[in-house]
Image (tube, rainbow, N blue to C red; front, top):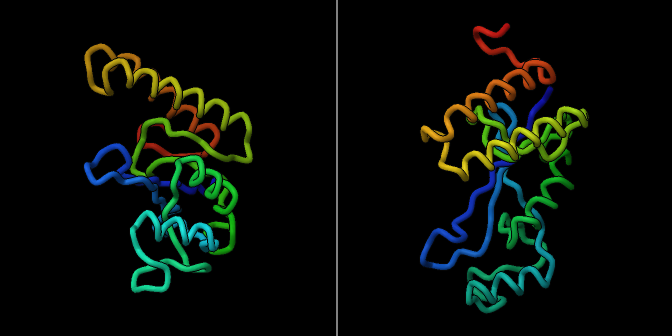
Length: 169
């Protein structure tokens, strides 16, 4: 199954300069593409105001210019779900996961042609998130539960995605 990862980056809530936007890229195999859109006139005005730049001056945004800045996580997610299969991204993608291809723990599945895989994967993702909130991945309190979750995740991926892991196939 051709898997595409939506990797979201932000400084929101983590820095003193008051970052207010999100960025993302889509990745499938070794191909990585920044998530961008064309600005409307109102979006360009909003960015210029937030950046304290006058329209028409150097560094100002204008209508039709490309941007990868999204002001809310929901705005970014909606755009990604609507466009990840567009020609400039991955039209032959079969699975969209919010996360990173280097992570083996459960990650949120945003779209999959197999509804049962998507449902089960997201149950495991939510379970892992609840476990993390109880003490992280590596505390004595959470390790036994995380090991259970990881075993279920591995079985699910082996069954639905035909993933090959050494020692399992």
